[in-house]
Length: 317
Image (cartoon, rainbow, N blue to C red):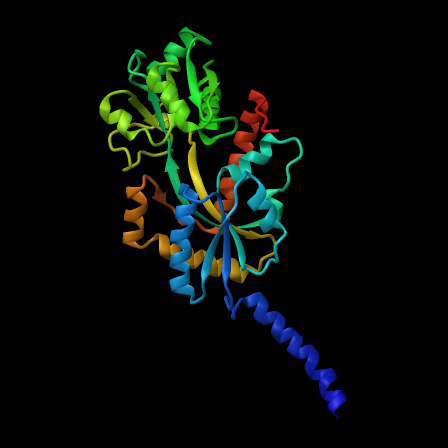
């Protein structure tokens, strides 16, 4: 009878256990790890805010683990168990960097499960005051009249401001030459000194206030309260959009119930008025998308930026 009971009960218990795992009813029951970029950067600070919010709402400790390098964090999380206890919080470079490599180390859409687009940071098209343009229309006209004569600064090959500028060139049909600097800070110094005439960047507020740079337009699809009164590039170049995005992912095959639970918790945190205000004070907009919305964004950007990378022969190898 004991043997018969074991034969009958064991499979039932297994089914029940499996159902529990798939439904995520006991999740989380241990520490959750969020892998992100180097200490002190905007992604690190954002990841720590989200980790603190999840710790409070989910009743388990959520810790942040910093990893430098463009692909190291992705490689770690791709190989982690698909149980919701190892996540990655990363920027748009997560899906644009593989486009610039001959042999990518991971496939974002195959090896990761999108959870939520958390934040979006518009960039700004700025110019040196000596450049006789004040609008995107005037800039395009000048660039077309003087092909190859204007330069734009960038913080490095494949950086967000580099790709944003190349996308602008492609969509506006202009020939503006890129000048690579070691980091965004160096590129901004080059712009302020007049070495280059334009740049698409963030963290240029003080230079705008002092008159050392001129704001032309923002890169978001719609006007943003972060830069009141500044028009969008898209108003002149329809369909243009290039923002720095930060999103949360889990390893592929993580149970849908766990993905949905994490999404609900993250979105609820990002929608808190005090959290929105904090991010806005740092120059960032909260989003809080669904997993499907994030997937659609990634597919769209891979298609669009993939063409830009190929046509401009951009390589990060």
